[in-house]
Amino acid sequence: MNLALDFLSSKLPIHGVAAYCIRSAAAPLASDCFSKSLYPNSTQDMLNRVVEEGRTLFPYEGSPANYCWTFESHQVYVAARADGIALALLVENNAGIQLSRIRELLQGFLEMEQL
Amino acid sequence: MPEEPSKRHQFLFVDDDQVFLLTLTSLLKQISNANWGFRTASNHAQALEHLKAQPVDVVVLDIEMPVMDGVEFLRLLGRSHPNLRVVMLSARLDETARKNTMDLGAALYLEKPTTPEGFKAVFAALDLLVTSPTKSGAGFRGVMQVGLQDVLQMECLSRKSSILAVSTGSRRGQIYVCDGQIVHAQSGQLQGEMALYGLLGLSGGEFKLEPYVEPPSRSISGQYEFLLMEAARLCDEQNGSGNPLGNGHGSANALRAALSETSTPTEARGICIEEALLCSSVGEVLYQWKCESIETRLELFKNLERGAMFATKGTPSGRFHRISTDSGNSRVLVLIQPTFKLLIRSAIPAASTVTN
Image 1: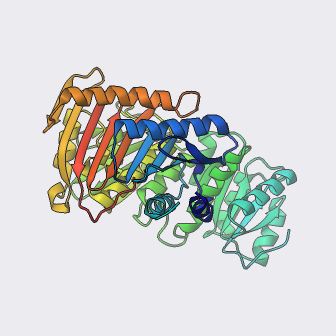
Image 2: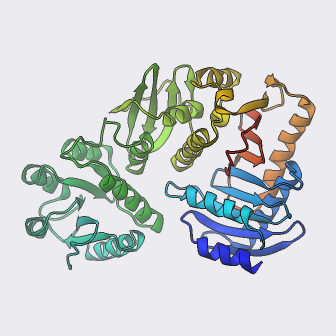
Image 3: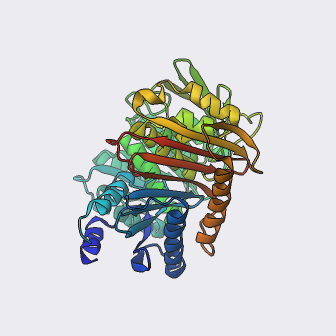
């Protein structure tokens, strides 16, 4: 998990990313919230639930998958690895977000050999 | 105020409110990562001295100033520095003042910021302005030297009312902006978000800004930031994966229209639509293509809405719009709109890894 956190800290902050969480198939592993306008606990709960709902509704067992949930106020990007560990990013809706860096981060997370 | 000639863009802010000037420049300095240089003046005389000493890229003028107000000073600058770009700031937005100042040559008319979001919006508008062609060059308006999205964002940020008329080859359309909100779009037979996304996805052509008139109906609601982001994402998807159904908002006719308006066949770009289902908000099937189990798909719509609501309980997420997923060479896109629900499943080439 340290490798994953090191990887994240090397990529963050990214403009527009308000929070993230990493969770295994069974439990949350790490999370952080960067936005002062969000409640950290409810945001982390939300990200965890979004990851779980995505897995339930669109199961891709044994394969890495990407999910993008779009809500009125934000998007949630999820990169789910084949080993069951998923990274979720809460991204604000604003014109200046850095989508290419977000994609790079998600792809990098999926491609990491070890976390 | 020390001059910073080495900075990439130079601004001169003119306002009689010293506290505001200090706040504005320190915040913009921070947001611009110290890439912008600032000078400040509390009246027109000081401003002219600054301009005489060294040129700037943009002058930002407060409208409400004693002795010579911002509008008068704008008029003066129009004569003395005709190629200078001037942005007007006003504590209260007024359509007449906006029109007057734009007629006098102002590049933008913006609300004076009072919140962090407001300062960010001013930064975004100024950033777009300084990265667009200069006033003395081809001009910002009417020439396809900036993206449609940029122009639209400028119109929205400065809370204008206008019609962006777009034409390219056989395609024509209009985007209606009223008080900074996108309220309507039409392109051929398409209306609403689908037309908007289609127009914003165009890669070339011409556009011009026309005076605002109320459209026959308002087909778009929601924040312009969301709409523009959505358009950018769909555009990106089209460029990246070639999925023409990324912009599948609308009725069954709209879906068919989208399919028929796509210039390149999906198969030709390596995308193969494997399944499509469009139904009304109450589950009435309006259109389906190779959908093996409609019951299962309707159940998926229901579970997805329920799941999204459950997942975002207690958060300010707002309405759920869509989900897209991809794994390997399979991709699913589901749109949940107040009037319809749409599912597209497609196979994508192994080479085009998609992170939506």
